[in-house]
Structure formats: C-alpha cells, structure tokens
Length: 279
Ligand SMILES: [Fe+2]
Image 1 (tube, rainbow, N blue to C red):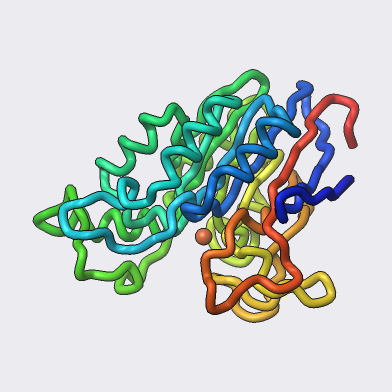
Image 2: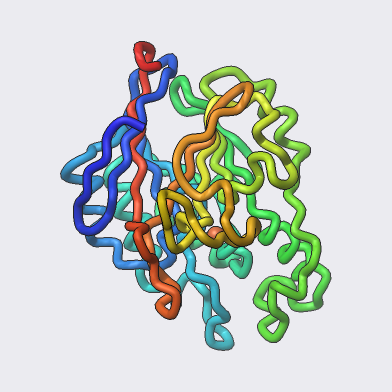
C-alpha cells in the first residue's frame, strides 16, 4: 500500500504493482445500488483510469415486485455502469448479491457496455482478466434451472435455501495456463485460502475481491465480522501475498446495512498503478 487519500467520504487506497505494461486501474467493489455520483466524480475527474474492474455486488439483493426485474428496480445500477463505461473499458464479475439476476437482468447489465465475465476471461492489452462467479450465483442458478419457470425469479424461494455454494472451478485450470498479467475478479476474499477454490495456490498475478465490507466495524485495524468468515475474519482489507501472486481486498463502496452501520471503516475505492518498474 502506498498512499491513502479521502474524497466524498470514500477512501482511495493506491497500490503500485509490478506488471509488464504501464496501466492505471480502478477497482469498484460492492456498489450495492448506491448513489453513483460521488464515485463517478472521483474516478472521472481525479483518477482517469485506463480500465475499471468491478469484482461483483453492484446489486443490493432483494426480490422485486412480481413481473419486474431486479436491475430495473435498482435505479442506480445502469447509470453507474454506463457512467463507468464512459470513462474506460469496464470488466465485471458476479458477486453473491447478483444471485437473483435472471437472464433478462444479465442482458441489461451487458447492454450498458461492460464486459461481464461469468466464469470466463478476456485479453485486454497485456492483461488477461478473468471473472470468477460467486458460488451463490452458481448454486441459485442451478436451483432456478430445476424449476418450471426458470427464466424468471422463483420469488417465494430464498437463496439461503440453496445449500451448495460451490464455485465452478474447471475453467480456472485453463485460465492459469494463459499468458499475460493475469487478474482474477473474485468477489469473495475467503476463496483465497479459507475455502475452495483456494486461489492463493493458483498461478494468478492478482486477485481482486470485496464482499467483506472491511469487516463492518474496524478495531485496531481489524474487521469484526464478515460473511463466509465469521467473527474476527482474516481477509477483509488490504493486500495479501501468496506464493505466486497477491490478493487485494476492497472494503467496498456502500453502507447498505443501516442497522449495523460501518464504524472506523470508511468506504474504499482501490487505485492500481501498474508498470514494469514497480515492486
Ligand atoms: Fe458480497
């Protein structure tokens, strides 16, 4: 970590990373249908990135009115994604809050101009960018496909009834063999080494995560609680080094849980300065 500044009550944390090509990237995690104005302002005017990376949870998950779509009901998502696309190419993976999205929602997301990486990767200059879909999405998707009315929401069934939360890992083996500076957008930081697919032991240069919201309350630099990790979780913020690459966790852009507001834990935007002479 190299520099921290604060703007619009959003902390901007800057990291310098050694990579083959000079490139500036912004990581926007856990937007959760928040007000897009402050974030877009910071990115557009102050940071001017070459690429924008979104490791999931643009949605704040809930069941929409019968006959309407989650994304249509979430009025900030499309302006946020379109605003990002006006600044730089955008690559996004799916987080747990995206589990409710049906095919029509996904098409709306794609229509904004983003590249949605749903267990797949693309080349972008010297970067190879992959998106690991949350196990919540995979499990809920197969559950939905088992129903008669698969194209829409099984609106009275809640995702928590879906017990298998396993990711689709097969494609990761091929992604590991790819050339280029490999960045994996992976919403859940616990996938690093707490649970499958144990990304720490895979040959990726950089894993970008969010999800933990910094542990919601931070005391002496440590988060208190995170989904998937429980109390006093290890992976809620900062940069973590593995034998092959690193994971950087964003503390996220929103404070969606009003009854448990963040404490000592400002929202966070990650700025990556990549280049051949950074260590
Ligand atoms: Fe999440």
